[in-house]
Amino acid sequence: MLKKKKKENMDTPENINEPTQENLAEEEQLKAQQTETVEAVEADEVASPSAEDKLKDELAQANDKYLRLYAEFDNFRRRTQKERAEARETEGKDLIIALLPVLDDFERAQRAMEKATEVAPVKEGVTLIQNKLKNILTQKGLTEMVSIGTPFDADLQEAITNIPAPTDDLKGKVIDEMEKGYYLKDRVIRFAKVIVGA
Image 1 (cartoon, helix red, strand yellow):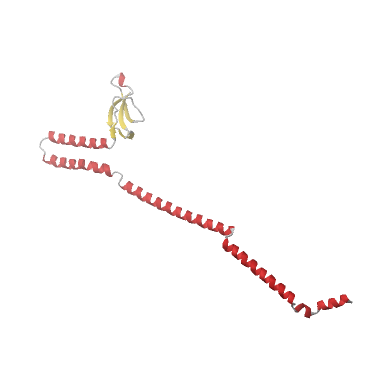
Image 2: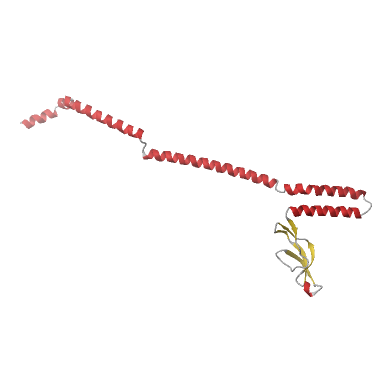
């Protein structure tokens, strides 16, 4: 019978809905503990950032460094392209400036030839201009190739034709030169066009 009474007391809606003082105290304690726990977690989050936040910061810093480096490289590339273009436009400037006096001399020689009655002074003037031109080109690193009397070398000379050698010692050697060959600072810039003895 006691059991039935207890069950009845428990099943009644009055007992279920009515908070007791003990229940209220327990609920207040639970709420206080939950609040403390939430505040502690929030304080930890503020005080020490999580591993995810640290990784996000590192990623942002790495992206920033990458963007700055990329921009710096892009500026360097543009600057070098501009400098190369300017260098290409003026790469023969020194040589041209050095040759301008020779051009002036040729213009003077033409004017002198119109008024000249004798050939000897004109020849002398043209020879002086040629020597001046050769000196300027030699200063810039141009040297003539010596071919006549040397054995034929396909790396340096271009054979135009073969003719019978006047003597046996000229067989396989250069007899005559149609166009001179030139070196520019020890590099062949024009092959000599030669006639070889057979």
